[in-house]
Length: 380
Image (cartoon, rainbow, N blue to C red; front, side, top):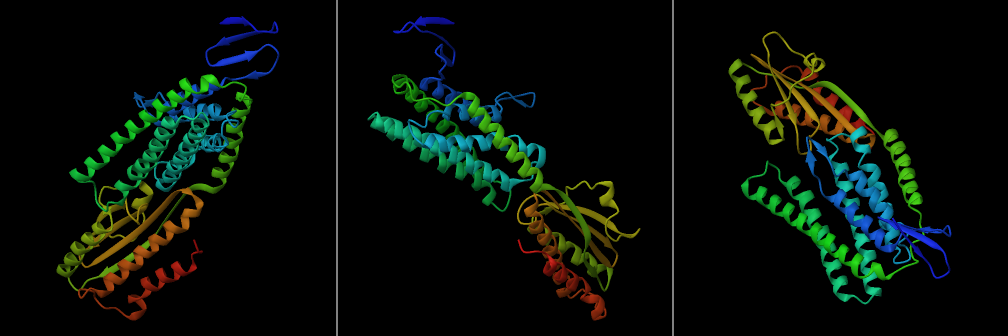
């Protein structure tokens, strides 16, 4: 800690990130604000795991970014907008682990979009700052790297998910190259922020007026609102019901239909790697002669849907289970997909020539039930 005397006899001390005046007006220097931004970006955009623990937690990075952006409104109003994005992300970086779980892929897209928005306005504020200082070179660098980050984020987020099948060697190489390009882009962004801090921020004083306590209060208020919203609008639900059924004319016909059915389900994203719970084992209609196969869909439109295919010598019975873990608004969509799948399979069974025709009352009962269930679901 060092003390210095001011022109009017006042004393001030300076240590680390902070500078405080004994006159009572406590402010953080502009250079220190940018130092917080540098550290915050490092925590938010890099991950180093030791023993499965991230030693650069995202929530710390977002909090540092909130503090860094606070008080820079005098340089550009875009810093205030960026602060809101970082405060929201500080909440979302913690809340999903409590309520949503790893299956909420749509929520991941939202987080990535907010990250892009936060960085867009953060660098936008620096572009305005550099333009005011007539530093066209920094303006150009910030503009290019901001655009590169957004484009790479979109490519890295959506490209693997646009593929209908697991990544082959060529597609996997594209993902790896994109990830490396993203890391290099973030490092270059860090470098240009460091240049803005060292070449521009040190020459500015008297702009930063927001207290760090006020910045953290913003995070806490956003956190309280976020926790209340997520707790009221998210949860887990699971429902099982009897799906499509098939009765064959002979065991040979049943074997043919069963083989074709496995191909149909494989094309729809189902695999046989599901380990059922004890409750799942009691679901559906089974007999002592049946052979059960448990299937689940990890990708595509039927993600979150599980099937039990029970094959006896002359019949196939399908039990359907759907589960939703996330925002309650998505429950109807998952339930609708489960009934739509059952309806598609019931109609597929009906069109098979191996189908043993029963009375219309029994033949069409499943189709009528699934159609009625779909019609009774509320609109999304």
